[in-house]
Length: 254
Ligand SMILES: Nc1ncnc2c1ncn2[C@@H]1O[C@H](COP(=O)(O)OP(=O)(O)OP(=O)(O)O)[C@@H](O)[C@H]1O
Image (tube, rainbow, N blue to C red):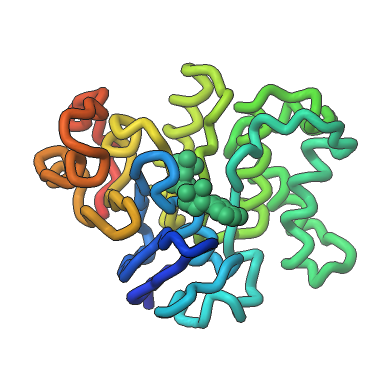
């Protein structure tokens, strides 16, 4: 069973079509990098895949169920666009935020020792244990990002969906964050990542989809670098490949 399955999806907000005839799937254990120019429909596609928006025509399924009716929300960790650059006060500590992720497993009742262990393990995995009592608004964008991932881990999410998660995050934290994603993917968590830096996508993702209203490429990162999809989707002549992906394979074997 696919984690995500989109078939012939068409969508528009106004009379201008945003997505047309989009077929795309994410399989268990896959790390899909979703790229495309500004305004090409990436966030919209992700929102449709997660059941947050309904297609005008076509179908969207999550774990084999219609995405819109999917009610096992704890199986998905979604980090929406702009999450790192929150500027409002968030009077919640790191440990409270991660604990919230555990509530579905405790039936929204009292957390037992196993639940508390799961919360500790999740904070440990992403390296935020020493920040447990800090408030979210006292953290850097990169640290806050890790907390969102820890919450998804405490949830035992099967899919992490991340929409430009490292905007506003410094380069070092950014690399560490993507290394963490690769590690989680190696443990079997499916990942879909929207990211503008194509070098990062081809370095970390196991599959790449390039969209601009329709799917211009869907396949392995190596094939993407050699295909005409970049020029097709972005317009000829635009230089978007920034790194040599072949030098940075994270060792995933999907
Ligand atoms: N709520 C909305 N109402 C009307 N138009 C919208 C809305 N949200 C997005 N759009 C338009 O739909 C198109 C696709 O937007 P979307 O955010 O999906 O693209 P994107 O590829 O994620 O863009 P970016 O890379 O710039 O974040 C854009 O032209 C955008 O202006």
